[in-house]
Length: 396
Image 1 (tube, rainbow, N blue to C red):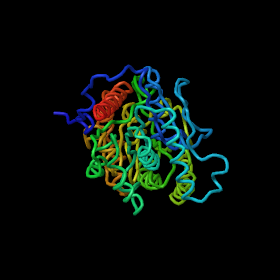
Image 2 (cartoon, rainbow, N blue to C red; image 1 turned 180 degrees about the horizontal axis):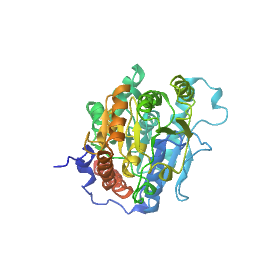
Image 3 (cartoon, rainbow, N blue to C red; image 1 turned 60 degrees about the vertical axis):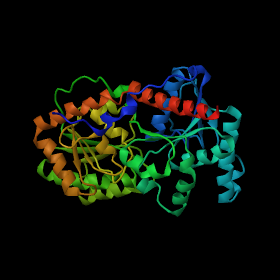
Image 4 (tube, rainbow, N blue to C red; image 1 turned 120 degrees about the vertical axis):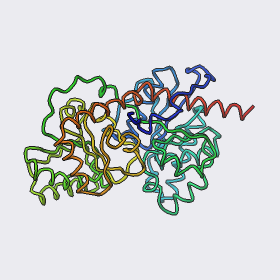
């Protein structure tokens, strides 16, 4: 009997609450740092646009704007809640307090029914602003908390503020378990939505001899490990190449990757492709998708590769994102974190067993059944309505 990924067992994708208001009467605000290309930013953009399309009043409150951003529906209200002219000259504590104050001012002026805060800095700001405004806050954890929430300051902020959250959305059970003792509200696990352009693609008749990876060039994505593992693959299969898609984070990882390519004499066999908005055209014919992160939330690019039917191999990294999507040996392969030999072995297993690789790819594509835009939106809508209904009941 075919096993199901952990995500298929989530009951919150099935339950539906009774609506408490008409959509046009409900104000939903999303708060995060920016809408610059990234996993959380993409999810917020997709959700904001969908809620607006369904008739809700939607606000996206960000700290700053940038040129390279996801595009919001014109019905979504974009609000700046970051530092203003002259604030940068203030000392650090003053700047921190001003950020909270500007968020409070937004919440008091627009009075959203709920604020959904994405990622660490934004969720702490929102919980602090809730103390003054009384507006319900749902926190959304996007990455491995053991890596992202380390340190004394984070420890005390978690202990002080997480218990005041009205709701919490996680991507994996491991992340939910990490915060369980600090939460007094109900929580849920919701997958990221698969962008529709990655669904319903024509079947691939013949795969090329290219291994692909798509992720921001940043240290914890560990593409250096991927290049070293590919060097082992390339020794046995010199006709294969590796393409790495993703923007440069500016933390020096791109330079380290290039150095590793040179050390392994892989010039011409490994290419850094930069950011691409057309991965649905560039990835489907690849031999396989390889993911090498040291830690993650729930990786969008792995989810999308699976939805396109690509055979996938990934590190089994905390906080369980790849494990939420992949049932090892059933719809993909999982290998230990940081293990060059194991990652190379996984890639070789897919290259040298094309029939098995094709079967894993076919089963991987079934992830689209539970992570479609419609299913994920319904899960978010149902959970937020439940949170808002609970708050109204408390006020009676």
